[in-house]
Image (tube, rainbow, N blue to C red; front, side, top):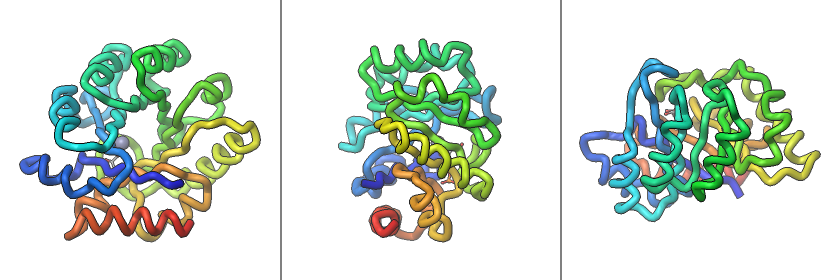
Length: 217
Ligand code: DX5
Ligand code: ZN
């Protein structure tokens, strides 16, 4: 089953509650957390997760694009995130941080920037609930998908399948109506979409369409 995770980064932040209500047909709510150091942007603190979790039934996944993720992980876990995704490029002790996320009762995800090789996952992949392949350089919504990331998705999907690992394969950045079939065919089974959903005149319909598109493969 393909899951859809709208990113609220490009939602109308002045009407966030209404924007969240529009995507209730989705499977996850994708929270882009940026600290202004790892990426040249700054976004939502844990209080946003605490507030929004009370107005939606959707599980929240916190995508931590932050330096020193060990500081942020407990904040977003305690605030109510069901899944925490850390960028491998920010981790000195990746195995320890994955254990920390799980001990806090959250699903553990690891995100790779476009140029980061899959080999960084060799000794942690069996422990992960999800791998997030960044299909843009992190920091902003509305960018164009980097085509070279598609073979990377395909290769990771093959590794997961060949080893019988249980982790999901998420893609994030530049997902649109033209590339979604290619991404699903390559093996992505969780789709983050921000611009595609929130720049659509009817975000609720866009979520339904994306789920339908993805189901067709
Ligand atoms: C970028 C974020 C993405 C972004 C979604 O750093 O991780 O989640 O908001 O991107 P678009 O708008 O391209 O779907
Ligand atoms: Zn993201």
